[in-house]
Length: 272
Image 1 (spheres, one colour):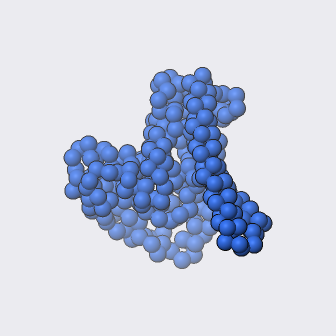
Image 2: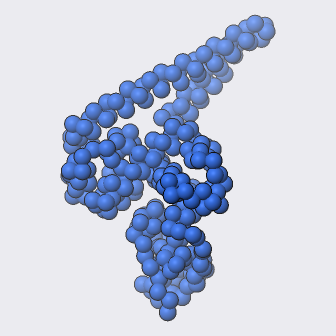
Image 3: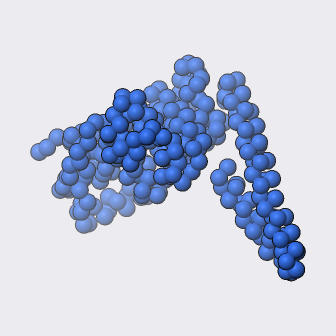
């Protein structure tokens, strides 16, 4: 039988299934068999980890399909694109994958593998953040923030894979802006934080280091400034609309305009 390899980094990119979802998948596989092939690259699973685990445990036959990539980074980008396309990710999982995608492309660029980047991402002009911002329908600054967040999550994962899993699974609550600055902390601070998360001792209200507190305060001021700017733009749009209607002798539907204003504020809230 062909040897199948589990790569922990690749496996960690897949959102962990809760017990109920895993049980339903297991029941389905036991009843109907494994109808979807396990996807491999050089014998390493790149898609189908949960199906493989259940099939191996219950002696359920399964098929495999092989993908060809020039290197590990290409395989990593394929996994990211596959996971994102399924749209069952939490905001922090999505941010982590977007950030890792950007970091991987920058690594490829650094190694001057422009043809590889072009075949995988449709660009060879070096504008990684611009391309990904367009692909993911977010701003370039969001891509850069996601890269810092992803780097921090990986730094925690190097100390404690379990702590990384808890963060990505949403089992521990850490402000995304604070989390994004953790990779810049001294190694001992990262290790201390990772160990607290893994042991269950972490409390975001009580266990902040001085460096984390400073990062949180700075991040809060940046968010507040962005929020103030966006509110001003939205408010200006509201009154421009009201003035336009009044100029054209149209009845001013204040309630409708306010509803539109509230909708724009809600969208701003979601982005924040």
